[in-house]
Image (cartoon, rainbow, N blue to C red):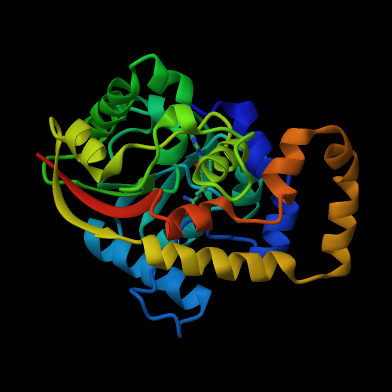
Length: 299
Ligand SMILES: C[S@@+](CC[C@H](N)C(=O)[O-])C[C@H]1O[C@@H](n2cnc3c(N)ncnc32)[C@H](O)[C@@H]1O
């Protein structure tokens, strides 16, 4: 699993630049354009929230848990609908930002949350966090299925029969290369280099092999109700993010200057944040990666 240090690296270090670029309640997972790229990023993110609310039943009086809540965009939407949301994240900067907006967010490992932690929920969501729940090392030790199965077993303790889980995650795609070929020393622009770059950007993280692995490991507790690929929508989302990150403001420039010592001293930081390419986007284009929106119901 990506531990707290990994997630502080990915999300807390550039927390203010994220919020200045994408907004205080920044959505940092694939938006839902449904192929209509005339929508703005904000409209497509709203469409995603509407879809989640409709699929898992977010209504006044209901209680929802967000596993890996980021800067709290879904929790804010849940509140707007008159429901109650609880979120967990491992990034202290995200938790602080969420609390500033009055959201009920805890620094807690999502994999360990059970009904003992915050009590029962009517619905659970997790967007863009599943990618962090299993590490390459856990995969290599043959534990990937066990990690996911443990998570689903814990989630099941919190939902009533028929209760719904919305899970949105990247997966390895149909053109994924053998893992032993993945190397940051591979020729720049090769599949092997892009996948390695992605692993530098998200230390401690690893992906399921297709939606099949997710559905199979969830199966003892959950049946799949709906599934769709968000791969092309994610490419557009990343394009929009990059434009917003690229827009210069005095405050952002100041923040970036404050990160200069990191840039000078950490090759990991340089690779992760300033390599000038979006590894994820290229990996989606080449179908080394895919992306799924999965709706489950507890059996
Ligand atoms: C890509 S962000 C997505 C944030 C948010 N769901 C959204 O859609 O904007 C991934 C989130 O997962 C959280 N996360 C990753 N692993 C976690 C873990 N084991 N426990 C709790 N949160 C975790 C990160 O801290 C971050 O908030």
